[in-house]
Amino acid sequence: MTEKQGRDRENPRREAEMYRVEAIQEEMALAVRFLGGEGPAKDQNRKAARAAKLSPTVIERLRWKKIKRVPADLADAIREAVERHNEEGLGRARHEAFIARQQAAVLASRLADIDPDFYGQEIARLGRPALRDGRDAHQQSGE
Image (tube, rainbow, N blue to C red; front, side):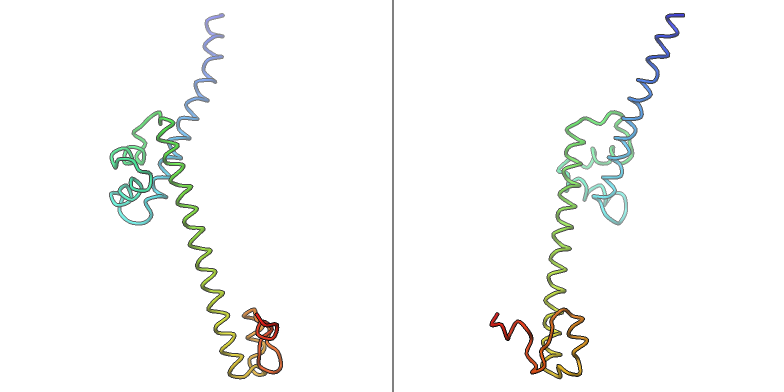
């Protein structure tokens, strides 16, 4: 009986370890697909390999879960590549928001030049309050 009890205690540990292994495999496969973007699998693998600075063969094996126990250095490289990708995306989003604000400011100043009384609501919606005399608040304060 003690032998069976030993096995019973060991199985949950082994199952937990297998769960962790499968979770890491799944994480790596999803990360490779995420880094690869759109398109065929071969192109995705190439893009992910460039992003993670790993060989395309390793990336392909991660994508299809052929590596049963992913080494920590590979997992770290993939996670760092995903983090870099997210930071670049955030930087692009900030830049696009800046461009949109600039375009809104230009449009508001054009509307203010045309007729600030008629386009007052649109100017306010664009974020630049117009004054009655046709100048905006920034121009009056000397900015």
